[in-house]
Every structure is written in structure tokens, then in C-alpha cells.
Length: 266
Ligand code: NAP
Ligand code: COA
Image 1 (cartoon, rainbow, N blue to C red):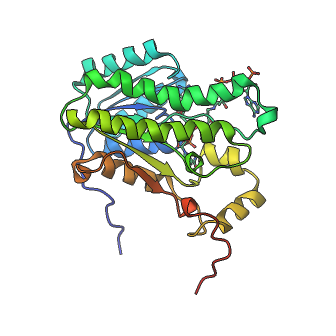
Image 2 (cartoon, rainbow, N blue to C red; image 1 turned 90 degrees about the vertical axis):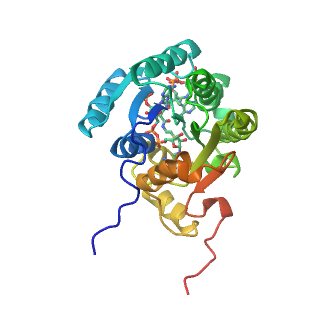
């Protein structure tokens, strides 16, 4: 049997997307999925090489695409990039705040600047992206999406910086959903579980033994795919989810349920 299409073709035809951190991993897959669905895209990340390669790739998929090398920690650069996006493609329908930083480190092995770097990239950066976008949004109907993580609600050792930053992202999403809902703007987050073939999992579970233990604790006993997250991003920002706001969508194989290693297959 041939595989079923995972989304309606042209679901995003004519829509304009601004995406931060969309030049590798999960967020790049989201950008590709939106390009295939007909969107015009503006991508930002720090590396101009990664931005250029991504823009070329998205154009190769038939999408209108542009981008800029921007560190989300610099509000004035984010503001300029969002304005450039709106000038190039028109009012913005969808915004992704996807960038993050992570490394395993004990709290006492981490400088104040190390902790601050991750909070600034993940939390302050997401605020910058959403704050700068607001005046350029196509309202009503615009949809904002953050990428959070299970660390927002599951405390984890050697992840104090990420747990604190992503918990902040969850509350940023929920409070903005309340504040901007009356203007016809939806704000949601996706919380991916461990996703195969990503920088995040190389950093957290690069050792095969640790990876095997990780999988054994998951209800579904396997890591997810970047496609799983791209499909969810497409749905939650589309009209199909027009009554969904302030939600943290857990696409996580059950990691948020807790340790499922004692459950046996029947
Ligand atoms: P990744 O490939 O390292 O992607 C991170 C992206 O953010 C890159 O495009 C990077 O590009 C950009 N970036 C980093 N710092 C930035 C900054 N200061 N300003 C602008 N852009 C910046 O990571 P990933 O594993 O796919 O993770 C993507 C998202 O999913 C993250 O939000 C992560 O927390 C979340 N997540 C991942 C997993 C997983 O299993 N991988 C699980 C849960 C949640 P440059 O280097 O060019 O800046
Ligand atoms: N353990 C402890 N401290 C660390 C560290 C580690 N593994 N890696 C970096 N740091 C510290 C640095 O020493 C520095 O602190 P200092 O100034 O007191 O010495 C601080 O973190 C900032 O490091 P720097 O390299 O200047 O930051 P950056 O802004 O260039 O990069 C990071 C940010 C550190 C998060 C980097 O890993 C990164 O760019 N990550 C993006 C990709 C990623 O993490 N993907 C996975 C997403 S889930």
C-alpha cells in the first residue's frame, strides 16, 4: 500500500511564515513541510552559511524564501528581520520561535553566563521573536508557535538551565495566548519528545547505552521523527486548529507521563 499523504497539499498556499532557528534539525523539517504546503518563508539563525543553504533548499522546493543571519538575543536584529519578511512577502500568518541551546552540565559546573546563554536563547529569544512579529501579523487568524521541551515540566539533572528556560517558554506561550487571543492571534507550543537524528539528542544521549535506557523508559519505546513534529506544527498553526490556543502539544512518545520502563508488552 502506498503511504498516505500526511497533510493536505496547498494547506499553506499564500501564507507567510517567519521562522527562527529553522536552519537545521526539527525546525528545518518544519520549514520544509510548510514550503511543500505552499507557504512563503523567511528564516533566521546565527550562521549565514546555514541560512543561505536553507533558503536555497526551500526555493528548490518551489517556495518563495529568504532569510538573514540573526542571533535572537539581539532584539534590534530580530525586529529588522521581521520587517524585512513582511516587506518581502506581506503580513505574517505564522511565526515559529524554534531556536534553542543545550548541553549537559551540572549546576555547579556551569558559569552564570552558561546558564544565562541558554535562558537568553530559548526564553528571551522566543519573546523577542513574538514581540517583534506582533505589529506585522495578519490579524485575525495569525498563529504563533514555540518549540518547548519535556524539561519544562519534568525536572532533569544536568539540565537546570534548559528546565528553567523551557518552563518560561511554556508560560510565555500561555500568557501571550490570553493577551493576544482577543486580537485573533493564537499562540501554542509543541513539546517534542526525543527526536531521532537531531543535534538535541546527540547532545543529550549520544552514547548508545544511554540512548537505549532512554528508549526503555518511554511508553512507545522509540524515538520520534522530525516528520512527527512537522506534521503537528502544520496542524496546530492551520485553520484546522482554529479553536486551539495556549496549548502545549506533547508529541513525545509518552515521556511526559513519566518512567514507563516497568510496563511489559501484552
Ligand atoms: P538544532 O538542529 O541545533 O537547531 C537549533 C536551531 O536554532 C539551529 O537552526 C540554530 O542555527 C538555531 N539557533 C541556535 N542558537 C540561536 C540563536 N542564538 N539565534 C538564532 N538561532 C539560533 O536543534 P534540534 O535538536 O533540532 O532542536 C530544535 C528545537 O526542538 C529546539 O527548540 C529544542 O529545544 C527542541 N527540542 C528538541 C528535541 C530533540 O529531540 N532534538 C526534543 C525536545 C525539544 P545556528 O547555529 O545557525 O544559530
Ligand atoms: N558545559 C558547561 N558550560 C558550557 C558548556 C558546557 N558543555 N558549553 C558552553 N558552556 C558555557 C561557556 O563556557 C560560556 O560560559 P563562560 O563565558 O562563563 O565561559 C557560556 O556557556 C556561553 O558559551 P558560548 O560558547 O559563548 O555561547 P554561544 O552563545 O556561542 O553558544 C551554546 C550557545 C553554548 C548553547 C552552544 O552550545 C550553541 O550554540 N548551541 C546551539 C545548538 C544546540 O544546542 N542545539 C540543541 C538544541 S536542543
